[in-house]
Amino acid sequence: QQPVQSPQAVILREGEDAVINCSSSKALYSVHWYRQKHGEAPVFLMILLKGGEQKGHDKISASFNEKKQQSSLYLTASQLSYSGTYFCGTSPGSSSNTGKLIFGQGTTLQVKP
Amino acid sequence: NAGVTQTPKFRILKIGQSMTLQCAQDMNHNYMYWYRQDPGMGLKLIYYSVGAGITDKGEVPNGYNVSRSTTEDFPLRLELAAPSQTSVYFCASSPRQGEGYGYTFGSGTRLTVV
Image (cartoon, rainbow over all chains, first blue to last red):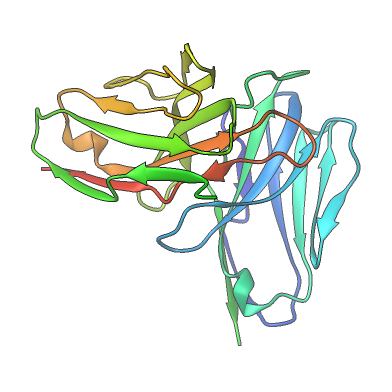
């Protein structure tokens, strides 16, 4: 039931792009993306709802393929501040009134100068 | 606006002791959650609540209890602490499920059971 993220880790140079994938074996109502820096709490990036469009702000965007139960997070022209661990959180089912999320194992992103 | 406040930030417990992790939010959010995060791992849902007086189990509820008597507070009780409960505990809240509504996390409680 836990979504699977890939890759587990990625190292980039500043200005390079990265894609992080999140796959579930169950039908999804929504997918959340969070970034966590070492020793800190996760911070909400964006939510994608069933039937929704690709989202994004600044140089971080995400898509949600309902048929495949997959979401992808796109980081373009990466900056040093993008370093951290990225988690997807999935809310299963055709609808959800609990808001509870099951999180993936995380993808560690390191951006080097 | 404080957001989600967790206390204490750090705690060392001896095996068999009990304690309560406090969580309070001032955003009038209906939904609140408790997660634990083991080193290098993702977040596992312990318990959650969709409103005052309503709680339910998550993925890993054994050894824990919760109550939700008010909208603001959602304490997590550890009974008979075990080394397997050594972890970082995060409380989170959200207004509801929907466009733009993600979790707001507290800063966490780092618990060590020795």
